[in-house]
Length: 464
Image 1 (cartoon, rainbow, N blue to C red):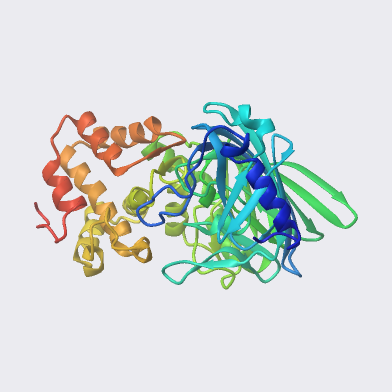
Image 2 (cartoon, rainbow, N blue to C red):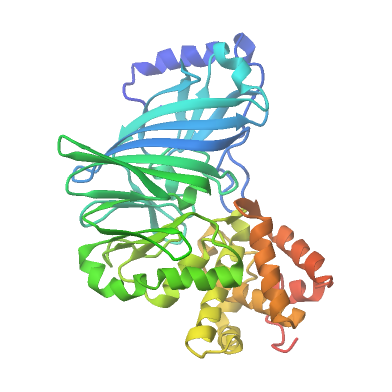
């Protein structure tokens, strides 16, 4: 139990018994606690599909305190007697399902929500139900398997939330596996003169009593690891691209001068990317630029990548390419992460060819000669600690280039890529989905290519 008062435990136990299937409660079975992801088997939850998160967050950065209310709208995929949410560290103050109090049990990072019998009809398979969770506490960073910190990171003037792969559970309860995408409304209240920036479009701003509430809306489905909140003394700018995409940039003043020229390239990079990969899949774009020491890495948070200090153009191209590969077309499991990183790395190679006179084949050859890219197949990192290692990026990009060489027709190749992003727009896709798609569209049996470049344990001949 991790509730406000230990005295609540007996009451919750009684409520749990009353709400169980054997005592007149919801007829059904509990949703699974975990989706058996190859690298994070306990991540995510079964029995329901979230369609919308409404997050109301009150943040006091100086004290590192967060008070939140999460309103989660979901559709039951089975008859549910109980279901799970992922949440790390924060204290749950109470929960309701369809407006009725629900029992809450805490076991590590798992919340078990057990509704009462009065709402059993709303938890039948195919029905939509709403859960509200009230919580608070001091949000913390989560140390990833590779030693990097994610989750809620305190910065010089505030905080930034980075979720890949498991950090989003550090600041809101939910179904935190990439296979369950949802729309989001995130309202963040912070003390003036700080600004709160999140995904999507800024739809409201209210100031009262020295605090301002910033309302952000993401209408397109988003995996929870791509959700972000950044609080700081940002310099912000709003504009539109010539194609009508709304741009919002938030830059720490210490990084502003060094970031100006690169951020000015966002419209051009988006236009170039759309020519290569198909129409931009979202209505807004931009960037969040922190100070160099505020985080250790950049992340492709949806609509608005986060950069630890001024980015260079190659990094900007990489993170914006993720808006197609990873954000719109999201991996089915973390084993499919090479589809994100391989295509984003290949985007860097394409940009270098078009803008820096570096042929793609030269980038391929350099990656081929790099021993680090051959430590394991991109589809089979040995463990979670290896998910962000070079083969996922460099060898993943080599797979993409080998497909291009096998097709021997650039127009057809880019039509293939654009067709892939269209076919799985705002959805999830696996490696098997991708290989089947490529073979169907090309009419080729590419077994030898997959065996050598995608699944093989050793380095194949460069000309093979």
